[in-house]
Image (tube, rainbow, N blue to C red; front, top):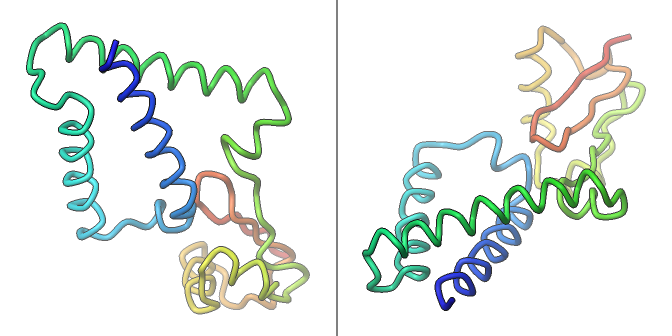
Length: 145
């Protein structure tokens, strides 16, 4: 039972940390970020299982994480009020060619990053953008004029 409690705690901790890091950072990972994720995964494993290397312990931890993942997806589907907490909300970054500085800063982005994303989608200038939205998956959607 101790494994279940530790797994639930670590699941909640990882959830909170990934929400705090922000969508934009998670969608544009650098090699260092990937290495950091592997290290975090190892630390999480050590914190959850401690010295339990049994198949029963591994099965318990994996099952608990699977159930928690399904449960949070179910909660997000069934309880509309929890969706912004569990999934986040889209954020408008550009409106009618004007960069919304407050939203861009809140997402810890620069205008240069926003312009680079626009260029990747064949948009030469933000003046040509009707609106740009940072989606809940970390991608930016652009609508041209």
